[in-house]
Length: 63
Image (cartoon, rainbow, N blue to C red; front, side, top):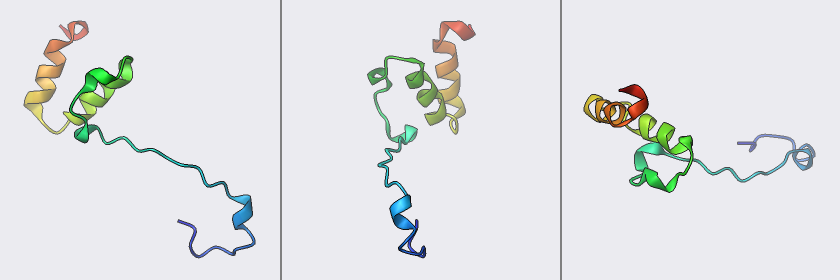
């Protein structure tokens, strides 16, 4: 991202590793033990009305 930056400034910039999660690529949401897994499941099914409806109906909080 910082290819065109003065090299003398680069030692002030931290190079942190960032792991990205792609919900649509996750097959098993049971790996997550918190509500984070539920949120990822809803995000993954957000473009599919049928899957979203199944997710909502399977959650007792919404029934």
